[in-house]
Image: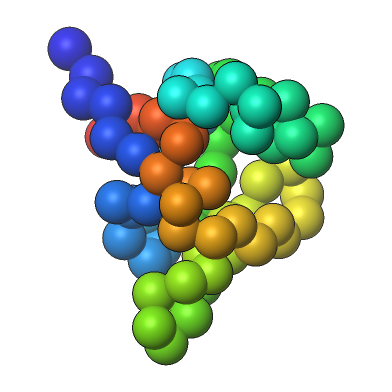
Length: 78
């Protein structure tokens, strides 16, 4: 059984799959930017004070605020 955590809890270099969203309004924006459920992601960078986060997704790098990342539920790659 897989454990779901928020994207904000991911460590630099960790890989995961997007599973769902907790914020409906934000999920529409994220889906338009390629953050689709099932899409693999890698956390590539974290700013010095922890915000924003940069993730590699769908062949490009996307920056998200920590509160936006907290609305994305992910499943870690084993």
